[in-house]
Image (tube, rainbow, N blue to C red; front, top):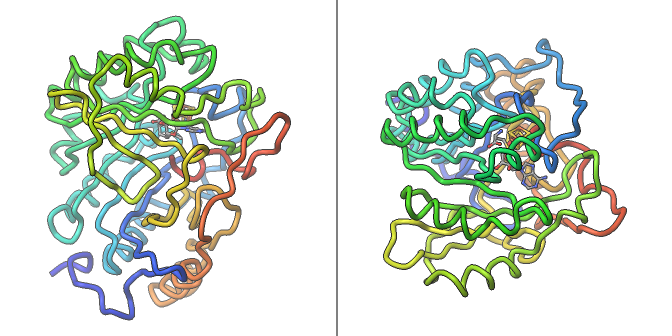
Length: 339
Ligand code: SAM
Ligand code: SF4
């Protein structure tokens, strides 16, 4: 029996001070990215020096410890996870735990390198991925991402579909940039057999503009979609801030991730590990625990103690607000914590 598949002893289970069981770990495997989406990053970004990053072995050891303590779902994210050169090794190593204590290994990617990696991901045990796609118009896509090539991403999505991966498209709703395209995107997802998650822009890290100018409340979007598509409430829950609807008789599920207009933190089941080895208990708070130091100085017992410490400090909820001139909720970008 592997370490990950051993059922956690009751006193090792991950339950926070608010009684929430932690089952889901998101890992940012790199803070770097080959795109610069305007709502996510500034054009000029300073990334972590490579010497500060966890090694792949350290990421895997920490992930396996979380599995041993009851985590059943892991998502690899970033930054762009597929730009980390050795990410394939990590996917293969964590993939060995799928069905052996780990219910699911997934990834969120911008799709630029999917064509290269799709088969490898399937072979490693990944069954579903999220791909960010904020527009189906090549010029708009290039503007939003600052230099992305829509054809390359659509090619990656097609390769992932052909490889057998189930695909959920992530689309951040942006006033004046893609709000008028959301219905088109949903129809495309229905035609292609993908799910669609719409996301409210969140105040994480400094960017080159004020997010309030681009913020679209999903309540407004939902009204417009419901007028055009038959939407039936779907009970699916992930322990995250999303709520789901089924689109008519299609296979497509529509998710609304609306942390600003609806708060669902009471059911939160996740924590986040950065590429530097920092554990963030909440996407929207600065409080953190240094798991890299804990592991390097104290081995597995040190790691366990640090995880426990963090868990007890997991806040009840985020405090996101979007207002003109308001400072971001955190200085770090979503790409550091892993979206
Ligand atoms: N690079 C990969 C990608 O874009 O899919 C993974 C990392 S990205 C940070 C993960 C998700 O977070 C993407 O769907 C992206 O659109 C979303 N995101 C990034 N910054 C955001 C923000 N400030 N508010 C809301 N969503 C954001
Ligand atoms: Fe890169 Fe993803 Fe952020 Fe876009 S959203 S800049 S693809 S990390």
